[in-house]
Image (cartoon, rainbow, N blue to C red; front, side):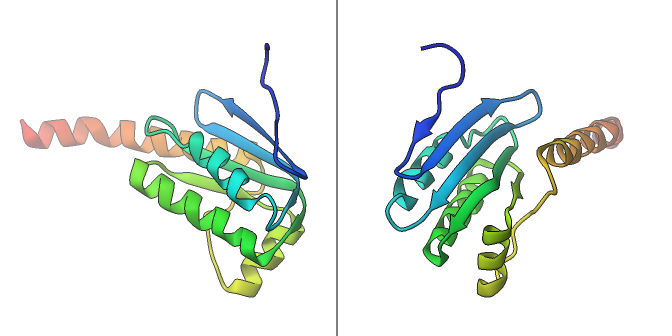
Length: 136
């Protein structure tokens, strides 16, 4: 099979793309009690130590309160891998987050998230010469 296959998760489809600046996982459809474990496992599979992570849920049409465990798992997985992450939400996802009082790093779009990661890399590159001069 060539290209980027979609993973089918009982009402949700998952696509993953490893870009230069970040790994982007896009979920479309419904995330509920029937597929949350599979969606979470697949999303976490793409959290890698070398790259920031973007979870794009902008095409999720239904998001149950129990599905918030996906966001907590991604947050924890990225923390343990030492990578930044960003979430792109849909209205159902944002409503569930607000109802639960949860906050995660949110971007308006994939390009906005990638731009943020590029800015972070540029900032670290600017600081690196200063750090090496102080340690010399």
